[in-house]
Length: 116
Length: 117
Image 1 (tube, helix red, strand yellow):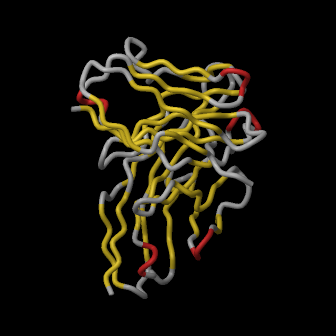
Image 2 (cartoon, each protein chain N blue to C red):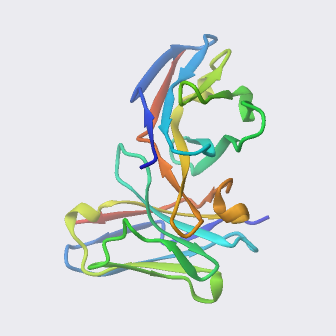
Image 3 (spheres, each protein chain N blue to C red):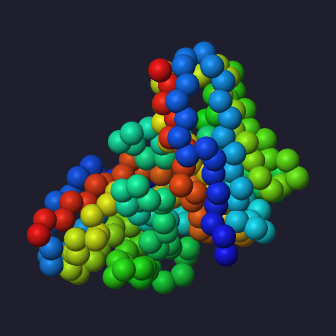
């Protein structure tokens, strides 16, 4: 069965330092992978997605992620954290069904805390 | 374009009562998703529609939850009867549904926060 694991429930960084949010997936085929962000009292929003094109994907607000098939990882990074990046981040994998469609499976989430 | 609309935004009911949530997706979006997000957890997919057909409802507790998407546009999710453990935020999302949904970007509504007392 395909699944996604976010390795850290909380990540704490200082403003201006790099951000690394880790995500590993298990899949029997080349998956589509996504990162979504959920700010307090706001709706979920797509940050970026990988769909078998370039392995390094750039998203909004300076975030990027690299698909590494050999490591089954899709870690999210940002060179310099900003206070406004404080939010909950979800890694998502598209899972195939017997009917040929795809359904999304969310990780448990990583809470990013940014200190001034 | 207008976003995904959900109502109500908040609902408080007592256990064993029934409740219904409504979702209006972005115009032209073929795929519609309902999620349950319990505090501190990631969203759990309850049901996924492609137009007005069900793609997956394997995690929908069918003894108490039901959902429909008439005419392939808006959708309702119902709980009857509610249990304490149903307290959660119920999220609706829609997508264009391209390539069977493999690369679907989901656009989320604001959610409905349900409290069951």
